[in-house]
Every structure is written in structure tokens, then in C-alpha cells.
Length: 354
Image (tube, rainbow, N blue to C red):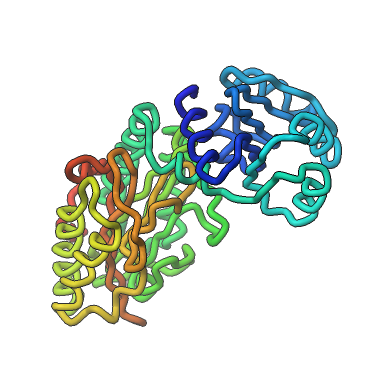
């Protein structure tokens, strides 16, 4: 935790700030070890304070690491307590709430709103974070094994999700709370697979379906993310060809991953091959993203990203092909960047016919 705080302050100094204030639970957890409703404060001397309503104080004291915990009333009480401690500091906060920022600016002249120090620090994972991500990835591999045993023709997408989530919860894996979906998983059979972020439905799996199974779950705070696509019986010639293209594209993307390579070059490695095989217009999203305390965080693995990959970044590589009203295919791994990609998933990427 001490090293994380040093890194946070180093990134704060780059934008001429000496104090960090977080309202976001992910950043609070990264800074303090406590995930809850509170404000986190990190001062230039490394002193770390949690300002929390009374109902959160007990957990904050038990779960945080080397923090002072202050009790304050919800709402204005929290803000007043914060202002009293940092009036004269050069403050950076991740606060996105306009009324709160307006109130803070009245009392703290040297305050700016930016998530940069938090995201830039969180991009590089420490060994504890990497071990948690590896464990989460192992559990997801076990869930793919469960898919092979449990998927069957006539089963609803929602029924498979129930089976998988029961297993996940038994292993202490939880829903990410991702705001852009109503479901914990993506399970999309047949034409539903052509929607990269399909909602789990009551559609029943049919013979000849491809089933996109995207398992994105949280273990000890950290998100692991992997996708496999299964076949139910004999699939079309076009679907088979597209699967082979996605599989080779993903291999090329993984091969491109290494320390100091530009993120956009990893995207290009995948995209160029899919283009060459005349499926380019069906690859409709970026190649990947950073993972950690959020489902999508820096760096972005996209055509426009000029970020260089650095050792111990955690990212995904996930090319896909989506043909409307027919099928979708995605193959995705979470990995750690070293002098090559250290893939955290061992489950096969060969097409499995169930």
C-alpha cells in the first residue's frame, strides 16, 4: 500500500498537485484497501485519511491499511470535514459531481478535477494484484469447462447463465456491476452473438448455433475477463471460416504484445489479418482494454491509442467477427505484459463442438 501511495503522489505531482482526494470506490480501494461509501484523502507526506458516515466506519477501520478514519454525517458533513483538512493544499480529485465540485472550489482555490493520477498509477499492477487476477482467470477457465459439460440444444441462454453464476458465487467470484448491461455475463447464441454486448435472453440454443460466452467477473475486487465461442453441432462453412480467422487474428495480437510496443500496433496486428481475409467490416470494436478494478480501464488497445505497453500492465486481446442476423465469434484472453504476453487463461481456443 505504501508503494501505491508513492506512485499516486508521483502522478499527482506531474499535474502540479500535492494532495489526492477520491470519491470513487475503485480508487478508494486502491488507495486504502477499503471499498465503500467514503471519501479518501492522501496528503503529500503519505498520510491517508478516510472520511466516512457512521454506518461505514466499522468496516473502514477493519479493512483499510494504515489509515486514519474520521466519522462525518452523510452529504455536507463529509464535504465539510474534507474541506477542513485541505483548504490550502494543491488538490486533485476524481469527483465528477458538479454541485460537489462547485462547493469544493469555493473553499479550496487550488483544486482540479482529474482521474489521471489514479488511472496512470493503476495501469501498472503490483505482484499482489497480478496474483489475484491469475486466480480469477483460473476460475473462469473452470467455468468454460462447465460450459462444455452443461450447454445443450434447447437450453435457454438465461439457464446457462444461472448455472455459471452459481458456480462463480461458490468460488467467491461476483458480478462486476458494469453499468452498460443488465446481466452479469454475456451468453449469446446464434444471431444474438452478432451483438458484441448482447443481453442474456430466453432464446433457446439450436443445432448449428455458435454460442459466444463472455465471462467477466470480479475476484477480490479485481476483474478477470475472457471469452470463448462454442459450436452446437455442425456450423456453416462461413462460420467455420470466420472462426479460424478470429483464432489466427488473436494469435497475432498476442504475439505483438510486449514491453514498449504501442497499443495501436497490437490492434493493427489483429485488424490487418481480419481485413486481409475479407472480414474487416465485421470487426466492429477495438482489440482490447486494460483490466483491474474496473472492467474497462487504461490502456485502450485501439487504433487511436498511442500509449506504450509497459511491464505488468493487465490487458485483454479480443478480436471478433459479427455478421448481423447470423452469428458472432469472439476469442478473448486476459494477460500480463512482460517481454511477451503472459496469458492468464489455459482453456483451449480451438473450436469445440458440443
